Length: 308
Length: 253
Ligand SMILES: Nc1ncnc2c1ncn2[C@@H]1O[C@H](COP(=O)(O)OP(=O)(O)OP(=O)(O)O)[C@@H](O)[C@H]1O
Ligand SMILES: [Mg+2]
Image (cartoon, rainbow over all chains, first blue to last red; front, side):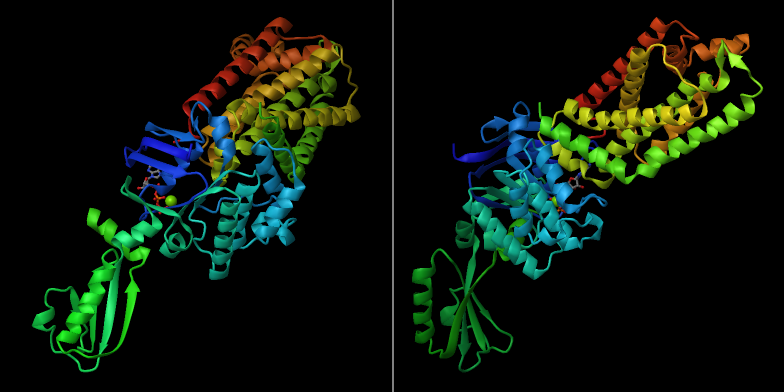
């Protein structure tokens, strides 16, 4: 069994009558980092909440590590750690007590050594006796992660873990996630920062209007949808794209000094070399050249636009 | 059974009580002492005795019930309402904890606090008037049963409430009046005829009567009836709690 989470035909219509998920099918592989991308209101949190047992699906089934989340709820929930999107914490409780509470709630014996390790990894050890209300927003965010890790979950859901978190901390979190992955923990994260998915994820799923639009290996996605750009800095500006090159997808900059060739990442080999030959044949000289790839963000934006 | 989870919730709630010790222990003790000054000393000096028991001693079981009901309800309702209010309930909903375990943790802690409170009130009362317990085992049984039942009622209110106001409304508007009418400070035999009949519809009468019987052997209604009514309360509360979890009422969307 390679899939640790199997979501089959899951729909959710809220009491208000709003349908947040429309027949979602998704399989998450054991040990991978899966990024769920989607605009506000796409249904990411709803989907996560269903897997965690907080929201009831209107239809469909979910299996976690081979157990159904309804009939095998005790087993599936004990495998999962959840870091919610909202900063929901107690106020008066101490850091130490609240992580201990979580561990107990998940049915595990007290293990101060493990909790210490988790708190240290999240730079909260010095704050262990502090009341939660005295922590900063970023510290609270880390505390939520510490709570989710207190019971040594095999699956970790991070619902926008780095929203409102500074750059340093974001990098710390990326590090933590890759360490967890090293320990075999499956991580599912939602994010608005595409660079985050690009940095961390093995696979990416895009959800929009309650529908899973696509699921792909990140590298495949980049290759498949990524448009590459080859820019030539011209020795002499052109007034317009020469007739001889009209068969190619070209853009000429406003001042005529830069010619850009857009091509799909897949057919990179032949295209670029052929194009450069044509350029020389046309008698166009250039002083410099460079290529850029589109980011996941560009891919994402174009995908979501396309479907609307 | 996730015993660790029950323990975690229970401990968490008990720690919360320690933080709010003024609210949970000190204020009921002070108000009990005040009742003794006002009812016991001022009024009690006019009423010699009720059914052979000095008035001051007579009101002790009723007074205790008054605090017990109020505190059980407010403790348990706050305990579960607060995580709903702050959103931390997500953690309990996503944990491998069954409804029974959640209730055992929350209502168990609330009931424990109430029983401790009851003991403290008894000790306070003992400073003012002589006390004796004719049926100590039954006394403890009534105390625990009532504490558990009304902690469950509190739990239900904490789930039903969608604001702090609703949290206060039931204890204030229903429980306190019923307790006063239910013979905390008098025997319902002392009421004129029509009111006596009305009082018999007040469930708290049965709780107080049975509880007083365990102290002094005097009762407004038969002890068996009291016990049956208390057990019926418990059963109804349990049924409602069961229904809440089965339907996910106000807990899950
Ligand atoms: N309890 C609820 N009752 C009614 N509608 C809801 C409820 N919770 C969420 N929704 C709706 O369901 C849709 C999906 O919400 P969800 O929180 O899953 O989105 P999301 O993808 O997590 O968005 P974001 O990126 O903003 O966090 C939204 O339109 C939201 O308004
Ligand atoms: Mg969300």
